[in-house]
Image (cartoon, rainbow, N blue to C red; front, side, top):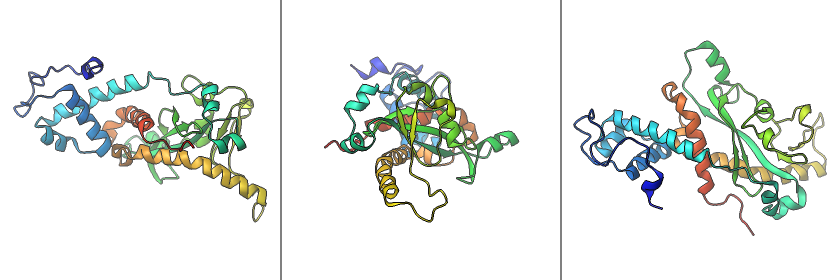
Length: 277
């Protein structure tokens, strides 16, 4: 199918950008180039004024293109279900996972994006991350045992705990997607509330007051770490989109949820995190 059949959104023809564009907006901006411009912003975090020079258009036009494509691409990718069925997960379990933790449905972790300090005191408090020691927004991301992104939460203030993000209920929550007998694999910072007893949580053992773990627990810790490393690598891939690895300005905060979802979704098309042997 031709590109134009999918990407007919921005109100521009392949002529002038608009009747009120500046004199610099004399080049043709095709839909393909609009998408290319959008990806430059996401991937490289190139400033809008630099993009404007590159495409020989005004900065305001660059801003409009980015906003329009952000909303459009999000509307497309967010409508695609990335949550696989239990059968699909089971059929694609890596050998070691099948041997040690055959009921694991998803491996989770949280990631934080730094944001500019809000002027509102309550917003400052809600977004303050003690872990990052700055203001952030935070999301829960899940991958399948074979390393494919299967869950992307909305962004919340950096003060929200990992446990709170995991235990959220309602439309779009991870808990609502899980079925009785499913297992989540996580780091130590996570815990399930009592009402979710139909779901099991696996995480590395605690010392629990002991000076060292017994040999069996040391082995368990290493096995879990080998599986969890893939979700950590996934987080690294998300931050390869440089727009998310810097400090998000407050003026762009209304778009950051869209950007995060889009960038996380796009990592699905990267090389597999887990090699199929």
